[in-house]
Amino acid sequence: MNKEKESIGKILLGKWNTKTIIGIAIGAALFGVLMNFGSIRVFTNTSLSTAMIIDVIVGALFGPLPAALAAFCGNVIADLIGGWGFWFDWSIGNGVLGFFVGLLPVYGAKLADGVFEVKHAVIYAITVIVGNLLAFGVVTPILTYLFYSQELTITWGQAFAAVVSNASVQVIIGIPLLFVLAKRNAQSNNLKKED
Amino acid sequence: MQDDRLFINVKPGKTFLDRLTGKTKVRTFFSLIFLLIATWDIRLIVPLFVLFIIALISIRPNWKKVWAVLGFIILVNIFNLLLMWLVEPDYGLNVVGGSTVLWRFNSFYMISAETMWYFLVRFTKFMATFLLSLVFIQSITPSEMAAGLYSVKVPYKACTIVSIAFRYIPDIARDYQNIRISMQARGLELDPRKASLMTRLKQNVTILAPLIITSFDRVGNIANAMDLRGFGKKKIRTYYSEHEDTKGDRIMLPVYTIFFLLFVAVVVCNIVTHPAYQVWCPWITQP
Image (tube, rainbow over all chains, first blue to last red):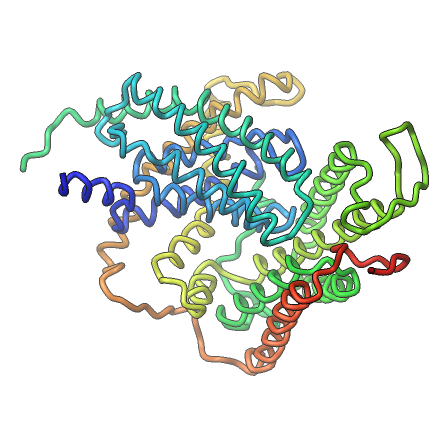
């Protein structure tokens, strides 16, 4: 039991080797670029963004905390090159979302070994929706109030738009993508590691 | 996604701001950006705005690129303001504290002087933020950024994440171009005159998948190269790009300290006085 718990904690943190660091860096760069150039605007400062897929991939390959960091850094980079001002509340919200989306390895979807089944897809869809609601429905409005002490009407609208658009991108594009990634990794990986 | 929009320098330039150490650049940037986020007072924003324009001129950027980006950003910001107005036309009532109707369309849509004032402040604020980011990106190299972040006690592995991410942005642009060209060679029609907007959007998605996959395939190579050079073996790290303080750094030290103190003053002042309306406006007296 104790051992089991320990291993979950380890999966949550991810392995902090050079590979993970580079993975986060590249994820953040792609996130930043896609947020700016790979998105369709739906509401003020919110858009149907393909950047949301990066969370999924980093999470699948490296775990939740790396996904959170990649999303957070990526959003800061997007703000830096985007020119709509810096919104650290949204960056942190994206980080929280990244954490939830990146929970993939925790419930057994090991993309690196090519494991992704229908049951994982269902759990994935649920975590995506819960994560989005929590990140943009709870965390971001609280932080917006604390950091910018702004009126929340616009933030609620943005949060609603963000939850709907992000969740739909992550479910509609994310699930087929995860199946493809799993299949691809399974093909290249039919050798077993010996102890 | 054109090359000219993603300008990241890898070689340091020759102007005053370029020759500062990464430490000074990063610290100045952070104190200014915090100040800009904290304040909604146009009396503070406009001088900063002018200062950033001078800074932008002083680093002698490629004006053609700068104008292209600026035009795009101005459009995006105006579009955002328009959407805000559509959602809540009387936005100024809560943040500026008044609603002087200038023009009324119907019972909901109207233009009030306070809303327009708020939009003006917001626009100036975000343009100032953007100019600051532009000057920052144009005058810093990725490794100077890592060195600067390290000097404000960010763990060096996190610094490496940021610097590699920045270093990788031009590579993404290059890969995108390469994939696009090879896709076109296979018969994918991306010419705006021949394919409709919807099909081009769909085809851009087909470029995205190989872009993401090649990017993540490269992780292993870069990680091996860095491991071979002993990355992450020691607790501390020094940076080759971080040179000794020059005269410019000694001049900038009090400058960024003052900006940081100003930021603290603005935050403390907001907490202590807790103004009823966030945005200062010349014709409205705060209660």
